[in-house]
Image (cartoon, rainbow over all chains, first blue to last red):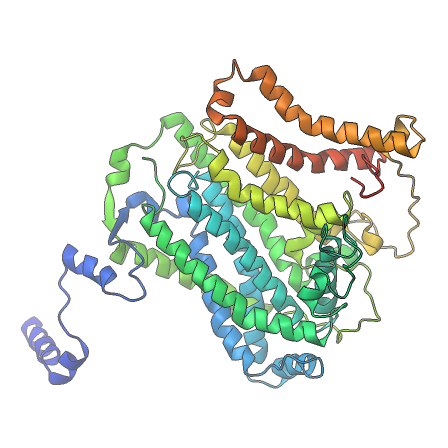
Length: 256
Length: 288
């Protein structure tokens, strides 16, 4: 029986079809494990080997990885949402309603996008907390900590720009409140201290953010482009730098 | 009470409720490991050199973790619908108007400071301070493991800032701030017509100063004196303290400035809540 099975297995793995798909066999050796990481597009940022303590959930809390996973989820669901959404004041709200009530699984898609975004904000804050508690920002990882701080801000900004897009009361007023701070920027905001008289509400820093003096249709378009194109690109570039530096700075921190 | 339950169970507040459980859990988890290290000593080099292959050991962990997280996210997305309120209407301002939940600590600071400080200067300093951390923390110990004994000051400052000034203020802003951004305890009903007497006075007034110019000068002296505390401590202690010697003057100035700025928030909160102080320094150009 066993012989028979072995013969069958060999027959399959030696067939032309099998060999056209899999270039070689899989030996159970350390060399194979190493190549598996080195030759894989998705996994090559990992080193071939790591310290055993880095596997420990209690040490890493998995929060950096979860943040990245949440980013991927929002990217995929976000692209799907873009098929059904027009960033104009006339259509935005109606498109979200249409998505919720008429598109198959539209509600689920929107829920996943929103909750993954919230999850990303939580996990990125916890990731930072963990990195601080383990002192992982210390030499030689100082610069990567700085990149991480910028990524935290980028995460907030990604979530904030997305908050406006449903174009309902919640979105509109949350963004109105959030951007009202910019009025008070010293020198550059029209209500801030030391603002010269040339700075008015139609040319200050808040105007640049909103493309208007209040949140309006042009704000919606501006936030849409920031949310779907500019900030994700920036986040991806910074993430690539962040992950690369983790590896170059000696991998996950440990007592040394 | 009903409105409070409705508020806590609001779909968009799920993350805040999650944080209420996650933060204590992770504090407990890290505290336990720190205690362990402090008792048993720092893990040795041999421990670090104990290496395993990333494939399959780490990839397997990542995969399992991703599956569990996706499961949680999937259940969350099926059970709870994302909120969608009425279409936006610039003429209908809700009371209270709240920023997204992760900015509510900043919005909460607006109670105690003017917008240019609470909304621009302090957030800017938070970011600058966070980036500066690795460059001003010269303590080489406590890298790559949980410990309390080896870096008590750094841990105390960061934990206070993160847990009290960020997370707690965020929770207060979400759950305990009602119409007019007034404070409402969970059992109190939200009253949009609540009359709050404006009895706050400036610090100079408490000290019996009535003249604007004197008050301006008084405020300047108080604020400058507060920030001068840093250099004074340095002059007083730097000859005898190894810690200050090692830190150096430039780093020390940055550390003391950031530290005093951070403490200014709880100080202002206490002054406002217990002494009804509106401003510490009133000048013709700005108020602090």
